[in-house]
View 1 (cartoon, rainbow, N blue to C red):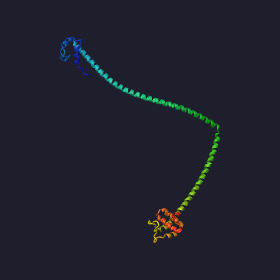
View 2: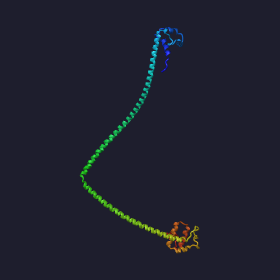
View 3: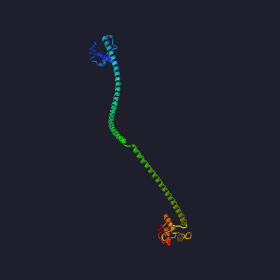
View 4: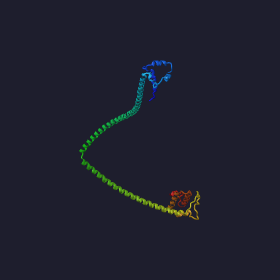
Length: 287
């Protein structure tokens, strides 16, 4: 509460109060002087004596009562202002709550619209399903009527006969497949044994050729029209080798030499050697 200058209010009331007996005379005597100086020079109410008259005491009492009422009014106004502040805060919170509720209502309205749309779709689907169910029930009734008209026992006996015939045919096919599989396994075993015999014969031929190959020595100095591939002091001559070998063994040796991819002088050497015995120039003619 603001501070009230009670002395100032009292002095102003004394000057302007219409009930004061000496108001006009006092005002006219001090008319030319400054108002502040008049207020300073004017004695206070506390210093006034009872000679000033009974009117001043009445005025002072009235002023004091007014001051008390003003103070009470100020206190009550402060309380009202505080209450109003609280009410304003409450109103703000209520407004926020109202806004949130309005937003929630809007969202709920949208959800309601979506739910209504879904309900309409579901109702349409429900009607379609009901129509399908009714159609299917009609079909089932027709099928039941048709089954009642047919002889179920005769159908079952005919189907059993067909199943038995199929089983007999399946068993015969399985036995035939087993026989064919046994024949194929026997042929496979025979082929394996023949292949093993052929491998053994090939190994024997290779060992025989190795025995003859150790007696020869082929060098890289062999050139066309020159046959210094054998050392006569340590190995047999070509003529002696060709004389001791048969036509079949010479062909085998040529096959081995061809597979080894040796120098062309070897071909020349064996070509001349075979030309003397068999009259063939190209050793590839024997292969």
